[in-house]
Length: 160
Image 1 (cartoon, rainbow, N blue to C red):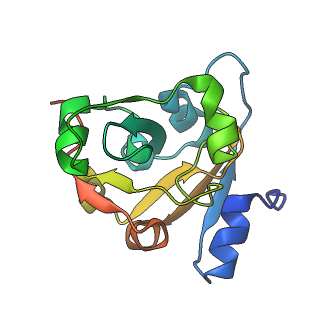
Image 2 (tube, helix red, strand yellow; image 1 turned 180 degrees about the vertical axis):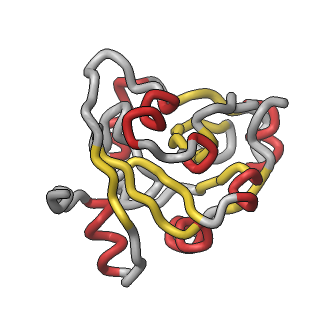
């Protein structure tokens, strides 16, 4: 397979000497569903995590990383982050704030480091796959490496 383009995510991991693999896949500009990523990459859907950016009443911005097959529980995120309430960041603000487009947002290498929370289900996965910072490319790395490089807090973030 051809070498993946060097994104901010991959440059950040290289600088930290964190080993990773990449998996490229064809993209559909209309659908960024993480479950489709599993089908296109052949990766186990339980190891593929999506990155969501939220606004809090106490923390202006925070990042949540959770399995693509699960739904975010805003009340659980508020509890975990010490906010009274949280809401999703408006889509038009994602690129200016993070440097990433919808469907290519990664918790690694954002323009600015934000408080990051990873769903506790990550403890069941030795490796996780998150966006490599562009649509059509996933980066796979050790769960502990992701937690370390994002300085993430592990918490219950999902419904059910």
